[in-house]
Image 1: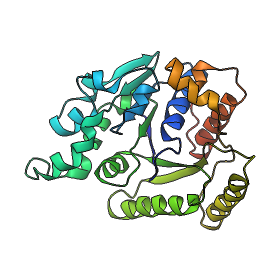
Image 2: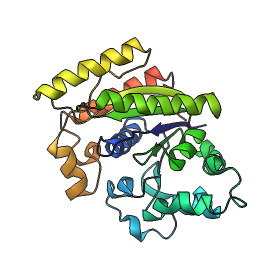
Image 3: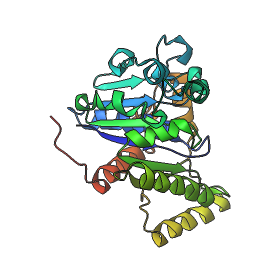
Image 4: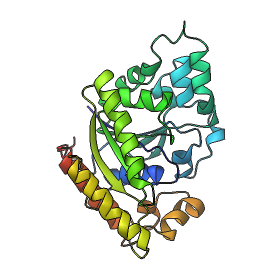
Length: 269
């Protein structure tokens, strides 16, 4: 049965989608029997675009799963061997209005995702959920369905404050709704060690995590124009577009950390 990771932050542009798409691709590349599913819940549909697909072209998406009861089996699309995607598009932007306007139909609005996801868990070894940059109804559904949360951040001025906000929301949700939910770790993204700001903020983030008993991955993902261009011009994650790039190794390194820290290293198949 799959381990479900929510990749969540309360700020856009920190590298959530890059983390999800590259780590998922790294798994199927490194583990020849592993089956992986990406679930996109962000109205921007960036996970689809990372693989060269246009969100608006999908007739059915995660929105139809949550609102109309369409199965994930019917919505998912293959990306490559053993890697599938449940896409999202702009329809997700109105989810909260559509659900809260019809409380008779959606009596348990935080559990719209859990049932459909549980129905396909046995088909995969890993499921990664890409979330929008807010802590609203969509995030609540993701946390209700996930086993572990990974929090990416960019070491900018308010980075630690952003980490704290997400942690507080996750811990509150854990206490009230899902005791099994675990914060797996904090990951630094788009790191530019040449800048004074990043050089100062990264140790501060590590210090905060250490003092509060939170795991922060040793591996950081460096800022790279090549990574950005892989999606923009080649329609595939950097792990596929430029496997020889030394920065790609960071994703394989952090994959090992995720598997080891979560005690999920397993013999697939």
